[in-house]
Length: 154
Image (tube, rainbow, N blue to C red):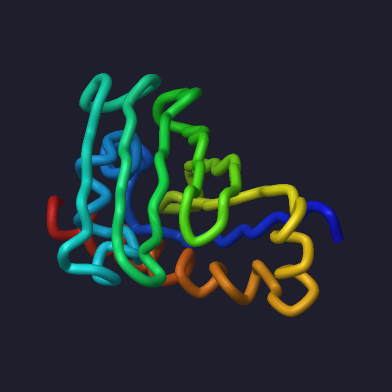
């Protein structure tokens, strides 16, 4: 397997207009990201605009938190956000990530998808690890925490 895709979705009982601001601004991720609790001493830096295309976030932590950067490279409010996710630790990788927001009933179907290519050491790693199992649970936790974060703002 040279490429992979991990995707999870959840029906959140809120409008896309209520959910979208929590994803389009990396400063809001501290309220719902499943990785925020991995390293209490994690260093975070923000650059570019506060939200939207060009917004950037960099982190550096210990252990599973790793290190990397994210940049919002495309956004269609309130339906889609595309992020360039680049890990520098524990392994170098670029993983395009997309969030979509689709009205469904009285809520919004939020889908979080990450794709990537397995090259070099990553290809060997993938012989023993399944990316869906590795990050799928984190996506599920993050979507549940996103729903909780939206409900506390309403």
